[in-house]
Amino acid sequence: MKIAQLVIAVILLSSCKAQNSNKLKTNNNDNTLLWEISGNGLTTPSYLFGTFHLICKDDIPFGGQLKTALHSVKEVYMELDMDDPATMLGGLKFMKMRGDSTLKNLYTPDEYKKVELFFKDSLHLPLAVLQGMKPLLLSAMLYPKLLACTTTGGVEEELLQLTKEYKKEVQGLETMAFQASVFDSIPYTQQAKELLKTIDSLDAYKKYFTNMVKVYKNQQLDEMLKMFSSSEFGMDDNQDILLDKRNINWVTQLNSIMKRESVFIAVGAGHLVGEMGLISLLRKEGYTVRPIVN
Image (tube, rainbow, N blue to C red; front, side):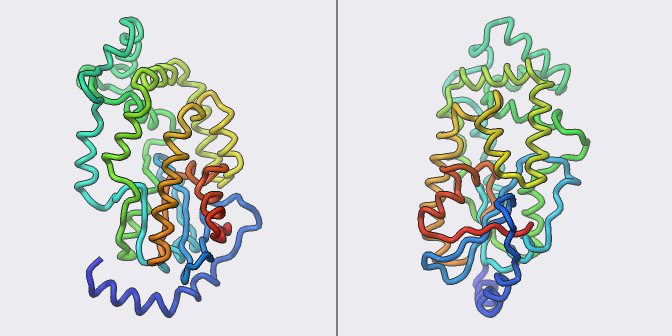
């Protein structure tokens, strides 16, 4: 943020933040994607919002209270600094597996042929050019096939448009290099197994994914938690790596960030739920985290 913008923001926000906060109506239960963080030494509230990485574009309307919350803060924190082109371009080099690992090395000849045919017939991509890519990233290429629409988008991308409209600076809680290391910490053999299982069970996975989108749209955080822990497509085996440790690290950062300035935190909705979710961890730190009508 430029110095002039920062000065103007300080002047404007100091007079309107408390007023904006009072306008935000509390939800009558915990089923919402938007949360207000206050107390524990904070002079102004910050906000926590759960996103979804890929969804039908028509399913991403933002409500008035979310926009009010976004207006009232100084900066926006996402998992990555998504308004920095270098972050996205730099991510390309982290898509590859370490060393000499290739997909052919991770599968039997029959398994490899099955994956190769799927990518050729369903995604119209030759697997030969994807040999070095991490299997979990290849799994993400299947997501558009799971949605009942032709125009897809990410909640983060739409939120990014609002941050530009509101002239809010975006920061990242993690770097692309760190996120790559998270994927690298899950054995490539396990990743390859999960990719093959998804291909073999595509109809069942589509049903699971459709239900997950429905749960997200209805803001049913309790149901989201159940889906993570009870389904064959859940993340029990890697929850500690993909969610819990990262949440702990984020809360450590946010303890300093939120005491310095009011921020809007937008991360995957899965990071909000459970005993090791951000809502619970922030409350354990002494913050008041209340659900906001969204």
